[in-house]
Length: 358
Image (cartoon, rainbow, N blue to C red; front, side, top):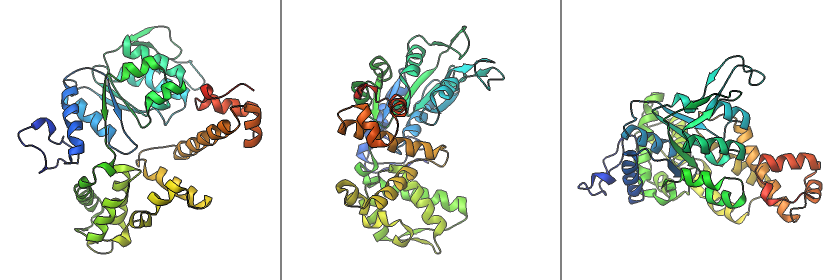
């Protein structure tokens, strides 16, 4: 649903909001301009921004404004699959390539031929898979898993990351050559806290959407509720706001969205104060982290347990390794796991460059 902004220069259509993108703030002007400009090319695009800032919507807009608009737009969430499954998902496989491969399968790169493939959470890919991705980008060719025949494709790549890829390059968990190949045109999406003036537009849009879906009529917003929504820091960004508005519409007994329909973390700002200073007890902090994690994901996302728990586990291992001077024997003892298990976890989470062998 497009908006009709009042604080954009109507004589500069390059900065006008895009179809299906909600936002009339100045923070979004560069995003709109860059999206329109890059859509005229076939260059690779790297979308950068926190979880829930709308990277997939911008990727779709680039595709829809390009000369590939009549061809497929295919999204792959690289963080939702294991390395082996992701390789097969991206490049396909032949019958007998591995246990369970009972027939040939076309990969997403091939399915997106002449169109666009959107690689979300590209930061979660392994170094092994990054080699194949680099070749697919540079040479426009690859082999299916278990096959020796080369498949050639004309597929535009748009990638997205919610982490600083250059930081990952420095850590050794992301290939530098792939980073520069993806980062031909970077577009940075601002977090919602940096465009709070868009919140009334977004709330109105989501109210209309969920009123229609749930046969409700929540037509009014209590001023105090709107103030709370605009003051909250929104770690899950637009996706978190959307989830909260949907919840309010479903739980409302009348026609007004008031503070009682919002989570206490929004109305009190408790999370913004306590997470930064770690003033919460461990159980409460854990509850808040899980809440933020779940609200930062869409209703279509899967493997929620693995995606949240794995991120926490990676951080625990990284911090314990650091505290132990990267001595794995000492870190394994502190973690209460054997050294072989720790070594596997270090490989799994790309912490190799930060650890010593003993």
